[in-house]
Image (cartoon, rainbow, N blue to C red; front, side, top):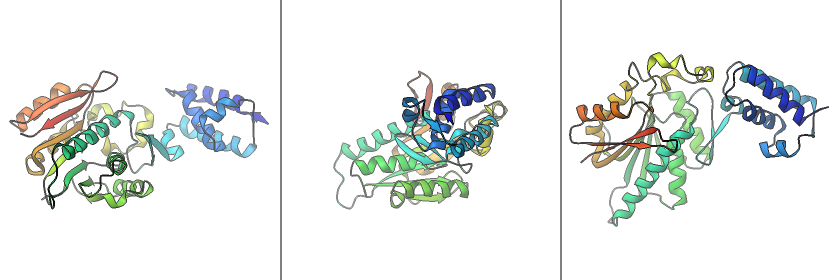
Length: 298
């Protein structure tokens, strides 16, 4: 029988030859999937024998990855913000950089709830996740608020124009036990009219320039192009949301937008043109790159 160490070496070489940017990590994840164990078990027991069924499964998954299919789609899930989300071609694979958006949104919601006692009968704080995709942002926020024992004080609305993506988002909400805390809405950006303005709006909308989409790594071609392509300047869809904000954002509302690392100046110019009087500040991620635009309505 072939050992774990031998199969890993073979898998790393196959993925390296196919152009993988992380051949060792991906080989470990795929072999772990074939054996039903975590990476730490593989690394601790390189001498362990691997049965023929698991070896065949690993070989099949290696070829899928070598052909470009993302590991997250092969495994059927991806970790995000300490949670596990189902992933498939209905929605964009969650990226680590989006975790900053969740962190800042949770912090803002908690700050607003703690700033002053909410009188009896006061309407709940309204939060919108625009273009929810697989639901990672909305579901993560709902889970975090549940841990804080925050319930009816916050309403979360998650919208998307893709029925398939909304179905995936609902599945993830059910999987984390928060489906009753999120209202899923099929809409172009947000419904019109909105029932009541939102206090906090978060959005990870497409922001890649159209001419750059086809130059992204081949794995990205398996994901929905509509979740990536932000038009000629990358800000076409974000600009449409900016035009809706006077209607959908509450007075004193906060909007958090994920942006590309080269769009800091462009997004603040756009806000200045389309939302006079609004404040725009760009947040930097842990790698020192512009990552989020923070918009505040007076």
